[in-house]
Length: 578
Image 1 (tube, one colour):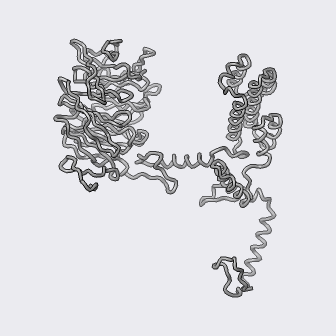
Image 2 (cartoon, helix red, strand yellow):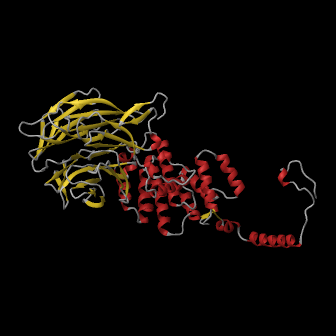
Image 3 (cartoon, rainbow, N blue to C red):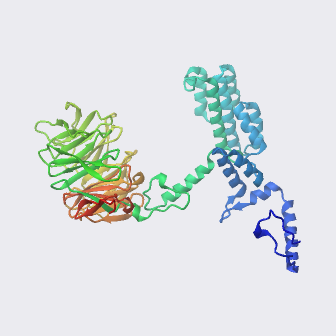
């Protein structure tokens, strides 16, 4: 005792003979007895009862296996082997390893025999596993040109399972017309078979996870955890690549754009409408001053003037971006629609009809035609050269109406009769209607074409789901509207928020799911007529007001370097500081 080996760590070296007390001896005897009792238990049973984590709900052997599987998927096979050796927990049993190899090699009869060793005890799962194996056996025969063997497998093995009748009909069709199936695969037969068997193995792993850990199981669990954290985050407005595994995710209120970063003052009168382009590279605004303005969004988040579009004889009320953002439509109040080239600022065409004013406009999905709402309460389709291709006289619009076209160009949405929205299907020539109790002033279509924000004259915004039979799902309240047309929009990460203008000169922001009012943004000195959320930057929001300005809202850590606000205008600082 007291002899020190050179290779021992200093902290573990004894400084002198240990003093052994009576209590120490009794403690060691108790530990020895406990250890013997523990060793008497079957090793597998002991491991199955071990847990990790503070709550004791994670089985250690499952946890180790999933980590091992992730290491293999990442290409760290040597590390995975070391983990197996140190933990004594193999990734798969020898029977499961044999089974997976048999699937890869196409030894189907042997697969069925091994399945009974590793497979489940319940009949439903066992039948499903049998179906995957026999289906792959059938497809192999088909690819190898053994049509009679494929037929016998289908008739004698697959059909008696009495499951997946729809898939059995597909397989039967392949027998009748093999070329139909072969046309779906690769020209290289060996490659096609290997890919098909790999897919079969993946299906079996998902069906029998206790025997064979599914591929990317750890990644799936981590993604689930992040999804739960994200869904529970009231202010979540962060792109996916900003999420981290190092800490629990929680966005603060400062992730909502609530700070004025820039004020745009080019318009000489009330700004009625604005909208970001689909790619977010531009912002277009329209005004009572008879102009529209195109602003370019720079990489640093600053907006600079690109074009002033002049030519309308009255106020410009509506703007619509072409799907590829190369062109822009502007609609004068009860006047004409003008089509502009965004790059040059040139007016490419003026759409007008004698004695009739155009009051709203939108693009077809391919960008090769436009749709306009007319003052005679019709909706017309024009080609780019200005020829009226079609006109629907039954679909009536009001002078205050919005009009929107779904991204696939199939559905035209417009206001009808004041308190009704018409959803007209151009292909099926059928219509659905949304009826409100109060007058509708404006509406906004979600990016996925499944939801509508409907602004009502009674100072409410209603969220309607229009996928299938229309139904109202939420109401948003708090903003002020008594005399003017005020617009709202979806926005933020995955359009999780609703923003709206208001007659009290503020911008209102609600959480779309909880309907909670999250922020009121002061700054404007007149009615906020319209808002637009940047389509790719969830931290940028624009608002247009009767005070003749446009405000760009953001979060504090995204302030543009080299600029500062001074008396409502941009003042550049040469030292790069604000």
